[in-house]
Image 1 (cartoon, rainbow over the protein chains, first blue to last red):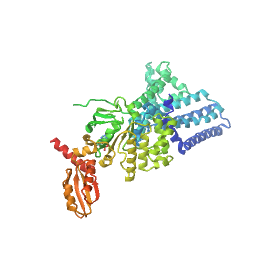
Image 2: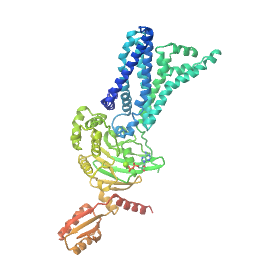
Image 3: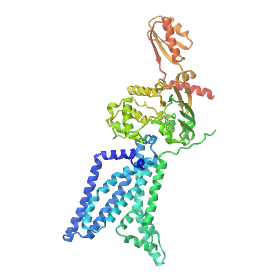
Length: 282
Length: 314
Ligand SMILES: Nc1ncnc2c1ncn2[C@@H]1O[C@H](COP(=O)(O)OP(=O)(O)O)[C@@H](O)[C@H]1O
Ligand SMILES: [Mg+2]
C-alpha cells in the first residue's frame, strides 16, 4: 500500500506541479471568484429582502456554489487526466519510464492521484466558504460532507476514464476530446435522456404500467444524484414511476464503481505491451 | 548474457527484423551496425521489453523477455535513440527520480548519484535544469540514468548520434570505462569505425537481417574488406614500392600522384600483422616518414557485404 501511494511518480508529479506559480494563482483566483459570487448573492438577496438573509436563501446559495464546483470538477478532470500517459509518450519520456522497475499499477494509480491532487486541493480549499452557509443555516453539515464526497467520487470516475483514454489513445488531444465527450455524456447526455424518457411516462401511467427507465438513467446521472442529496424529492417521482423502492445510490455506486475499477484495470493492462512468445514458422 | 532466438518483428506485413539470432556472452561489448531503417531500434526496443516480438524470443541474464519482463527490467539499463527529459527537473533530481523508480532508498541514491555524475563528467551541472543542458550533456545524463540501478546489461541505441566530434569522443571514453567495469553492452550505430574501436564483436544488419557477425578483424577478413594505407617516404621510392609489393597481405600498390613520396596500397591483414608490417619496413631501412590508415566508411563495407550477399544468393 505504502509503495502504491508514496511512490516516485506521485512524488515527482506533485513536486513539479506545485513548483510552478501558476498553480497557486489558479487556486487564488478560483477562491476569489467563488467568494465574490457568494458575497454578490448575499448582497443581492439582502437588497431585495430588506436586510435579512434567511435559511432558504442560504440554502439556494449553497446549491449554487455546489453546482458551480461540480461543473468545475466535470470540466477540469478530463483536461487534467486525459494527457497523463499520452503526453509522456509524446515527449518521449514514456519508454524510459516503462523500462524502470515500477509496476504498471503503481504508474497508473500515481498518475491518477497526482493529476487529481491539484483539483482536490482547489475544491477542499473552498471549504471555509461553507462557513457562511453554516452561519445562516439551511443546510446540514452532513450534506456538505456528502457533497465533498461526491466531488471526489466524480473526479475518480472521470479521472479513471481519462487515464484509460490517455493510455490507449496515442495523441493527447484525441484522448482529451474522448474523455470530455464521455464526461459530458455521463452528465448532460444522461440528463437529457432521462428527461426524454420521463416525457413518455404519461402513456405508461395511463395504462397503469411500471416504467423503470427514467429511474435507472437518473440513478446513473451524476448531477441529478448530486442534487438529490439536498432535494430527495427529485428521486421520489422516478421511484413512483418505476413502482418499487430501491436505493438509487446502489445503482449509482455500483455502476460507477465498476467504471472506475474497469477503466483502471484496463489502463494497467494496456500500459505495457503484452509480451507474446510464438514459435518462428519454419 | 544476451541471446536472441529467431527474433522476428513485423509491422503489419512489413518485416523490420527477421530471424535474428545473436549470442552475446558476459562482459562483451557488442556493436550492431546498420543503416537507418535496418531494424536496430526495433531490436533494442524488444530487448528492453517495450515491444513484443512477432516470433521468437530473447533471453537476458537467463530471463525470457516474453515470460519475465519485470525481471529483465531489473538487470538492464536502456538508452533509447530518441528520448525526452522532464524539463523542470534539475540534473540531480532527474537521477533521484529514476533511482526511486528502481526502489533505491534516499541513502543509496545519495551515495550513487555523485559517482554517476562524476563518471559522465556532469558533477558541475548537478543543479542545472535538465532542459538547459546541451545535447551531449543530456545524452550523458541519460546514460547515467540507465546506470542508476547498477545493471549488468546495457542496451544503448545510438548513444553518440547527433553529437559533435568532441562530445562523441567524450561518450566513447565513458563507454570504455563501462567496458572496464565489466558491463555487458549492446550498442548500435550507423557508423562502423565508431564502434570498431571499442567493440569486441560486431554484427552487421541490413533490412532486418544479420548479414555478418564476429570480431572486427574477422568481419574484415571474412568479407575481404581491406584497409587503404598511405605511406610517406623521404626517398628511395622504387625500393619502397618493391618492398610493399613483396608483402603477402598487401595489394594494389601505387604511387600517389602529386603526393611527394606517398605510396598507397590496400591491406588485408589484422591489426597485429599491420604492426608487423611497420616493424619489418623499419628493419628493412625504408625511410618511413608517415604511415596512415584510411578508415573505410560503412558505405564501402556495405557495398562489399551486399555484393557478397548477392553472390551467395545466386
Ligand atoms: N511503429 C512502426 N510502425 C511501422 N514501421 C516501423 C515502426 N517502427 C519502425 N518501423 C520501420 O521498421 C524499420 C526498422 O526501423 P528501426 O528499427 O527504427 O531502424 P533503425 O533503428 O535501424 O534505424 C524501418 O523501415 C522503419 O520504417
Ligand atoms: Mg534507430
